[in-house]
Image (cartoon, rainbow, N blue to C red; front, top):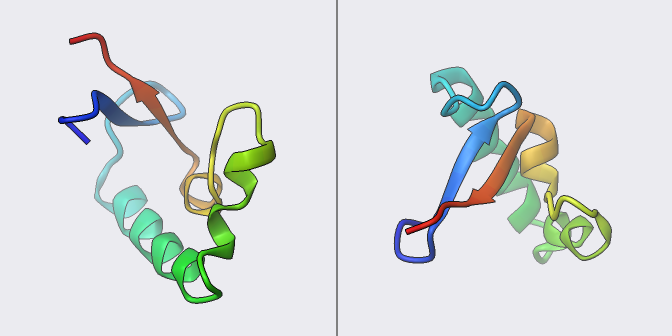
Length: 65
């Protein structure tokens, strides 16, 4: 993610805490199991959030390099 200039932030703008990161990891597994269907909301959500981001209440943002 550093190579692409991306950062994961919680709703309050801080980096996610341990529990939120674990929820995001579990959400990633849930997204991958049904043939990556959990990533389909990225195509229609205006904030480009997948199911794993919705579950963990995180956002991926671009960081100026």
